[in-house]
Length: 239
Image 1 (cartoon, rainbow, N blue to C red):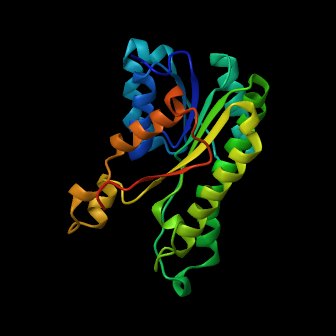
Image 2: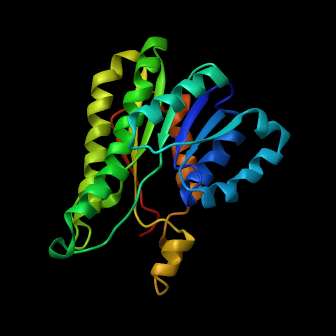
């Protein structure tokens, strides 16, 4: 049974390794989806979804710089014009960097904060007025396991993901009276081609699969998770 029939979702970062699995899961569950992308090369890997006649009726790809509030506001407007509203926001867009504190430049910290925190902040702020007006909404952010405990080499990244978790908790507290649930997932290392290339000697079997994370996200935006808001959900696999 499709759990998201007639629900309208905006998905940021929907063309990446994790986002593409979330996008497919949204469509399989009956949702209408707006996939926000930034890189043309990743779009080429996902555009084939439009070949499916059923998906094509329920899918839009829109390009935006998620750190530009006016561009994101236009995405929300186009979603409402095209599909009639917005019920769900999933903030997958983000980035990663490694480096000890003394080796990390300020511009790297800025990049992590913009890519991980600012993008989620702007997108959340853009959809909330519409969700409040309709007295319904589901938001899922992607934080990270290092957000809970600082780890050497991950200072800028972990700080930005900790901020995403705090943004999740704050937003949930502010909108809980409008039937808007706001939660975050906290993955460990995700089993992606890029991570396998970077860590070829690791035990890939212990890493969490993108499709498994996608199922957790679908749960968090479905009615099955109605009592859950303001939570950081560990999705570590066996790592």
